[in-house]
Length: 472
Image (cartoon, rainbow, N blue to C red; front, side, top):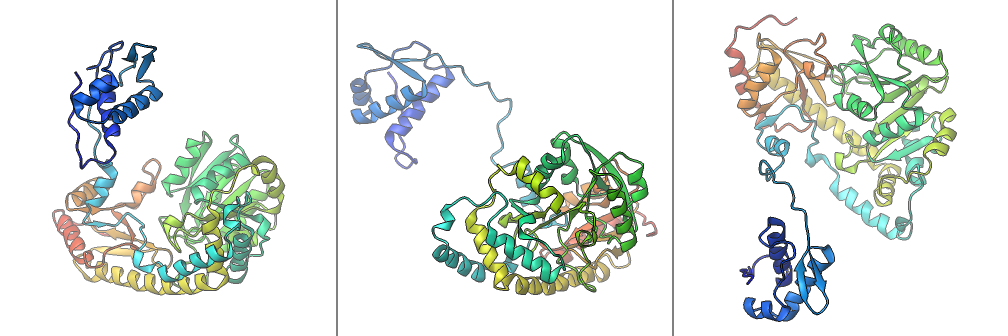
């Protein structure tokens, strides 16, 4: 007779517990195929539960195919293939998550400081959106995004980036990663895509996952090398000219014009301008976009609100040149917009009412102050005299070249043993490349300032173990 012990504190009803017990016995082989189960009344009396409890458990097992009924005979165990035995138990927490939770300080992550999010304003706009857009929220947004948001984005770009954009040119999507996928479908998998070397590795990974050919083009002090690009067969090039990641290079006008000439030489050449953190420039005026200087409609502009508002917002957008609009409608217009209307209308109000502009002003000031504090700790703290900083004028990261003879991999390993997660410039090269050795990529936006001095002392102690070399 089947005997089980029920837990009153366990979540779920008694019949759900009984269902799980019997299912487990069937999958483990303790109940064999063809074996007859006790009648509902008999099992109910044995387990001291109601008949309805056993009835509901049997009916659930029957519905899922674990047992079958024979008329006037009762219930029997079905032939069920047992799942393969796992060679090792699955970890309770994903390894990467557990590892990240264990860092004393993470220099590699570009996390946002949650204290900077405008919770009060955003909550008020959400309530306003519900009241004003109640019925509209239940309708699917157009394929390219809610008209209100596209108009608001176009207005912001015109006023603060000097870009003349028709709202119809804007495509809203849930993150730039999704937009990369759409662009591959729009431009074609038969094309070869060029990426910067070094560069953000996820971009190349997305292209390669879509089975397109990827070529890595080196950068110099002016950005992506057009002369090297000409030696390759790429037709589409993905660049971040306003602030390259991770070197921080800003592409000057001469190199931009050279790149635009390259694109105009053949009919199906395009430039994907990734303007991911252009809002955070701390010296001088904002750099004009490549899109604004393009006269041949070869630049596709991409930007995101993940850096400026919050990563969880997941709202990004791209601007297509007019020559690609009709192609997009025909090839990809059947896709539904991937961002909820609720968030789109809320963000539209955030832009229209000037909150985004004020929020950016506060963020620039806070991040400038934080950057200065982090740099001061590097230059005047435990690493004083053993570090050289570059690329600090824009964006939310800078480079710190350390005086050490330790190979980057060894330095990272020793730092990890001290609870420090480091990202080295050499990590951003596809195949090693000619990276400046011992160069740390410091993503400072989410750094815990209280832990930073102690973290740098730990790093300094590691460097003291080796004879320093001279910084180039």
